[in-house]
Image (tube, rainbow, N blue to C red; front, side):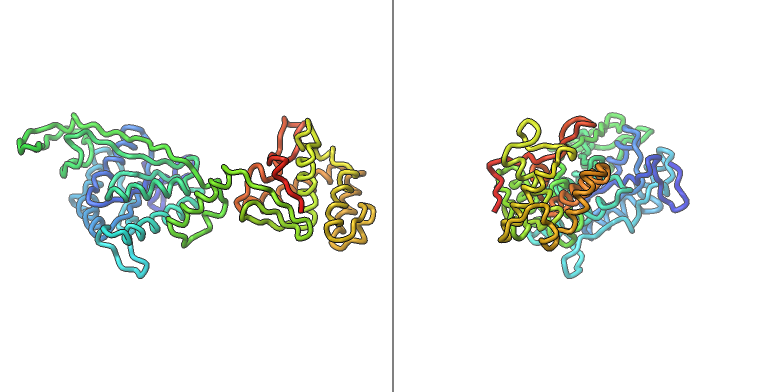
Length: 400
C-alpha cells in the first residue's frame, strides 16, 4: 500500500476508504478488524477514524499508537505495510464532548448517551456528504449503546457502497488483553477459565471473522437530511419515521387551484404557474382515468391543445373568471402559454425539451418537501414509448 505524496492512499476507483470506530476500553477491535479486512479479505484501508472518550483515547495512544510498542505499528511491520499508507494518529481520534465543550471521560448517564449519539450522527453525516469517501463503520466496541449509534447513523446516512460490520473473535481470544490480531508467527498466550485454571493457547488457533450487518438505507426518503447539521440523533430518527409513515400511508393529494399549492398531509409545495398548469394537467388525467389504458399516463406528443384548454379553464375559473386558452393574454402571469402553443404546433423538439424541464423542476420541489414517488410525475414504458403520469390513487386527488 504505497503512500501518495500527502501521506494518504487513494484507490484505483478514486475513493478514500475510511474505517470508522466507536471505541472504548477495547482498542483490540481496531487491529482485529484491520486484520480481517487487509489479510483475510484483501481490502484496502486508507484511514482509520475513532470516536471515543478521554479514557478511550489514552488507551488507544498507549496500546496502538505508541511509536515504540504500539500494536498498530507492530501489525504493519508483521504484514509488510507502510504505516504511513494508513492515516491513523491522534488527529484522526475524535473525543466525545458535551455541548459546552467539556470532554467526556466516560459514558454513563442518559444525558451523556444523548451527547454521544448526536456527535456520532453528525460525524457520519459529514463523512457521507463526501462523494470521494467510502465508509466502513464498525458496530463493535464501546458500551452496548455505543454500538447502536453508528448503526442508526448508517441507516440515516449510509450510501450504497458504505458498509457496516462487527468483528467476531473466537472465545479464547475475545477481549484477551494481549491479543490484537493473528500474527504471522504463532505466539502462545495464557488463558484463565472461570474456575481460575490456566492453560496456554496458540494464536494459530485464533479465528477472526468480519460479519456484515445489513442495514436499511433511509437517506432516499428526504434529500435534505445531509444539509441539516445541528439536528439531534433523536430528531433525525423522528423525521425518518414521519417520512416512512407518509410513504406507507394513503393521503389525499390536495391541489389548491387559486394559490397553486399542492398538499399531502402536512407537506406543502407551491409551484410557479407553468409548472402548476402541467401538474394540474396530469392530476386531471389521473383523476378522470384518461390517457393510456385509462391510467392517466400520456406522452408529450399526446398533450393536445384541447387538453391544455380544459386545464386552463379550470385554473382561471378557480380565480373567478373562466377563460379559454385563446384568451391567455388576458390573464396575468400566463405569457408562457404563447410560446408553448407555438412549439406544440411547429417545433415539437422544443416543446418536449420544455416538458422535460418542467417535469424535473416539479419533481425537485417535491423531493425537497419529502414528497416522492406516487405524488410526483413519473415515467413508464419502454424507450421510445415513454409516457408520463401519476400513480396516486384517482380517488385521492382533490382539486379545490
